[in-house]
Image 1 (cartoon, rainbow, N blue to C red):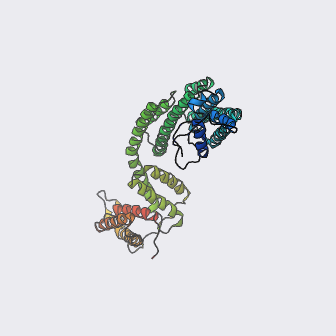
Image 2 (tube, rainbow, N blue to C red):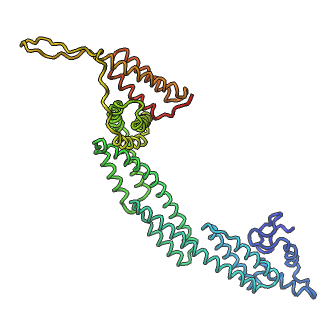
Image 3 (spheres, rainbow, N blue to C red):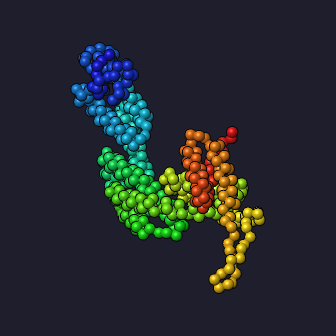
Length: 425
C-alpha cells in the first residue's frame, strides 16, 4: 500500500477505504502511483493510461493539465464550504460522497465530468451555507425578541447587520466567525437573565407576603426599582446583569431578615383561632395541616415555601365556620359568688373561685392525645424529635401552672403534627 495519496499527497490511513482528505479510493492508489511514475510506458492501451495518469491531481502533473488544476482548486473550495456547513451544525456526508465520486471519475480519465460534479457540489454547499446562516440569524433574532419581551434591553442588531454584510461580500468564513461570537454573547446574557429572573421571582413572592402582613420595606422597593431600570437599558451587557443580580440579592437578604418575625406573629394568631376547635374537628383539619407545614418551612429557612403555605392557610381559614362555644363547666367546680361588703357599704360581687382545675384537666387531656400522636411518628424522624421536646416543655409548663404558655405550646405542636402522616401501628 502506498504511504501517500496520489491525489492530494496526504498520508493514507491503514485499513481505510478512501483518502480522508480528498476521498480517492485506496484500492486505485497503486495503479495511480505506477502510472504517475512511468508515464512513458504506454504502447497501445497506454494512451488511455497516459490520459488517466495526467488527470490525477499531483502537483507535478496537474501543472501540465489545466483541467486537472481546475479540479484541484474546485476540490479545495468544496472542502472549505463543507467545513463551514459542519461548523453550522449540518451533516456533510452527501458532499463528501460527491467528492469521492468526482475523484473516481477524474481517475478514470473523465475530467470534464469530474469538473461538472465538483461545480454542482460547490454550488449546493454554498447554498446550504447561505440557508443555514440565514436560519441561525433568524433564531438569534427571535431569542433577542424573547429577552426584550421579558423587559431585558438586549440589542445585537449591529452584529446581525455586520454578519449579513460579510456574507453578501462573500466573506463567508468571517460572517460565520462573527455569528459564532455573537451567539456566545447572547447565550451569556440569556444565562445571566435566567438566574436574575429566579431571584426576582423569589423577591416578588416575599414582597407579596410582606404586603399581606401590612408592612413594607422601602429599601427593598428601591432595589427592585433600580434592577428594573438597569434591565431597561439598551443594550444590556453582562456587566449590567451582574450589577443587577447583586442589587437583587441584597433585596432578597433584607426580605429574609424582615419576614420571619411577621410570619411567626401571624401563625400565633392563627393558632389561637384553631385552638378553639376540637382536635377531631374535620373542617379545621386542613388548616391545622397547613399551619404545621408553614411552621416547619419557617423553621428550616424555606421562606418562599412558607409564604405559599401561609397564603393557602388564610384562604382555608375563611371557609371554616366559627367554633361552637364550649359548654359551661360543671356547677360543682365553680363556687357561688360571695358578697363582700365594700368600704361604702354597697355590696359587690366577688369573682368565682379559680377555674384552673377545669383548664388544667382540658390541657392534660390534650397533652395525652398529642403524646400518643407523637409515639406514632417514625422514631428517627426530625419531626418526632421536635415534637417530643415540645411535649416535655408543655408538661413542665403544666406542672408550673403556666397554663397560657402550655396551651400555646400544645396548640403549636398540634399544628405541626397535623402536617405529618400517621404511621399505622
